[in-house]
Length: 439
Ligand code: GAP
Image 1 (cartoon, rainbow, N blue to C red):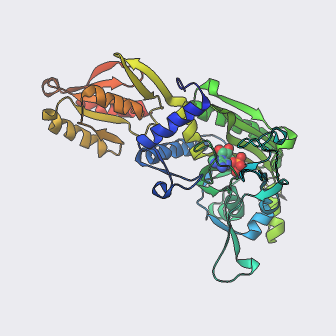
Image 2: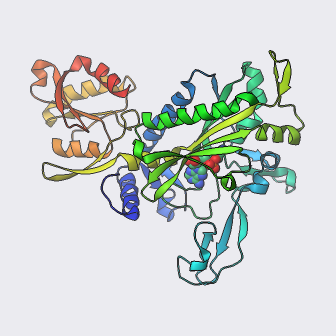
Image 3: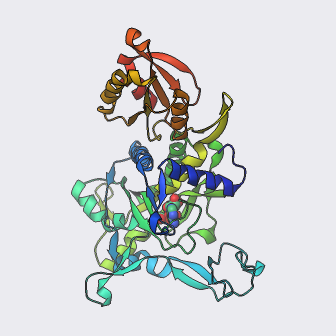
């Protein structure tokens, strides 16, 4: 991010821009909002779709094996979460200040310094708080009707492993990928989309022979690092950080976080975990079902090992906004520009008639491109300068202007968001121009 100097003002700037331009709204805003829950507006939804498409492409575009898609249910019975370890292990330490009644995560600051809200030294005991949302299915009140909203998408993949394996007759190694919602009752949701209670994850579970799992753990680290480069996050803002032994989740043999340098510090963007055979073995023993595979070459049956790559779509969305945000001065006026990679930008091009009199021919050109399925906008309100500024602020990579010469030379002016270079291009070559830009 170039400009706002403190973490708080950087965050406020992004929150305000997101609301002003229709990227993200506080959920149930007109009722005072729901803490840690957000809705995505038109531009936000388009950008999320672009992030999902880039992620899906990145996990499939590798030479090691096929990746099958899954869309699992959001609810699963308690038995699944018992087997996965979430009922017993998925909790955060919670503490309350008895003076101001505020609640905190006890591992996020030094309790001996007093309450960050009121300064009092009046803590309750630390309790373990399970972060899953529990619910009851149907009218029966016995424990067999207990279900939980999933806190990660991964378990739907493990539970369906044998279904996918036998339906598609795939051979190891292969991946199962899923993009979908997860829910965590975070004690302190914070930093806008960074830590929320309802969020989307993009998760890949890569199943392989036990002897190949360490190698694939390395391969996926390199692949994931390249992904962040490809979608435009600046190198200096991304780093890989191995977990110390005492940080490992209950299912991990080893784990590397891809971290992003947010204005509020280096924080996890994605977890890459060597889950070994933990999940499949747990589900096999709890369900009584055989989740092993038979290796025809080795004439041997074994439980596959798993390398997992897991990133939150909203958290990545936030990192992309911070990374792309720039302020500069143009012709004496302050400009806000989102330098998003064209593949991530919600609107790919804006079509601007120089004056309203030229609306008709420009609208026809815009419509022809829109009908090809490229996300573009027609904009005829305000001066050209104002329209440029509007599109810079939402990251539109190129603005096309139709002027009086266009009627004679059959060309329009393309103005690049980042270089500000303006070039005349033939209307006939417009689609190719846009496809090159988006490649
Ligand atoms: N299946 C593994 C798993 O869920 P995790 O590290 O707990 O691992 C993976 O979560 C990713 O999901 C994180 O790196 C982050 O991007 C995202 N994530 C987790 N909790 C989140 C929350 N409360 N709000 C937003 N994103 C979250």
